[in-house]
Image 1 (cartoon, one colour):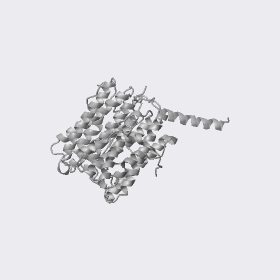
Image 2: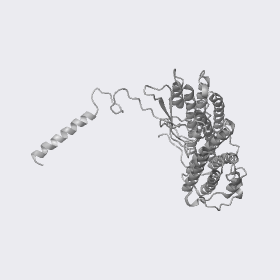
Image 3: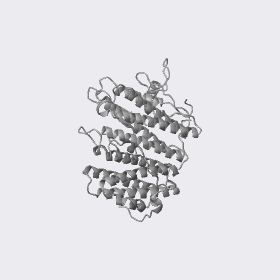
Image 4: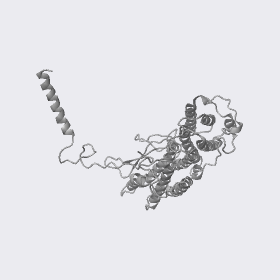
Length: 263
Length: 180
């Protein structure tokens, strides 16, 4: 190694040290696990360190039933919300609410039989993330499509419930519980068809299609196989560009399960 | 330790599962053929015929998916017992629509029972994804036949054809016909 090589190597080493010091801990700066970001970074809350067994899946299903029933109670309790063409939806939602409470009781019966503790409340995360803000959009003052949006939200809730049971079939360990889940899921699917036919009646509303603006229409049979994709729904007052707020509903997962430790 | 999901059940259909799913496939092919027969009956409107073709194609897709899941165990033949029992009902639109609604309920119930018998998760997931839409088929047919018949759409009075389920014509089945 000659003198020129030594100088070149020194330059590289010095550059590396400068870069390393820029990336490393700095004096008087509190260390953080977060990468550099502007503003306040939300802390990374860890999920519950618990197994997801059949009882957790069933308790979660029961919680969703209570959430949907509570959503329908809220819609029915909103004065004059279901009116006009959608007035018949009130009787449907009353019936469906009762069905959901019955489902919750049946599912909790399975929980009890399996040695678990029944869950008799709504799912807090589903309520907080989906149903409460969605209903707020539906009932927002001046919403020109409030009744339509209420039925659309109910259809989304039924679709979500059906998908939750269908998805549980792939996670439940007990074959008999899988069959029970599939049976309840079909009840939710039938609810969805009734609401879909209310929104888009007749033969034209059976298969997926698009309206004159190219937007997808409501379909009683939206696919060949039961899907597990997220449920998208647009609700509330149209914004400046005419678009309503978009909600994406996902079936309960690790952050929405009702774990054994929850009471 | 992170939150854990359950495991242990086989993912792919077992030998016992293959027999159950082969039966389901033959039932799906029989109902597909019944839809095809109904679509050939005069008196249906164009939109009714489109619905018959759509639902019939769905049943063919179910048979194909089941065939893919069980491979060589698939018979790829319709259940002649089911087909023969209902072929004569595909004569008038009114009668055909009523019978097809019953058959959708029957298949949905059958798949639900099969889910309780299948050992592998994969077969159960497939059956569940089929049963969910067959329930939709049944509810849709109920509402289209009698608009406002919510009770008809929500209920499933059909018996299961699954082995060990309610009495069914499956016992008389002779699977001899190659599906189209």
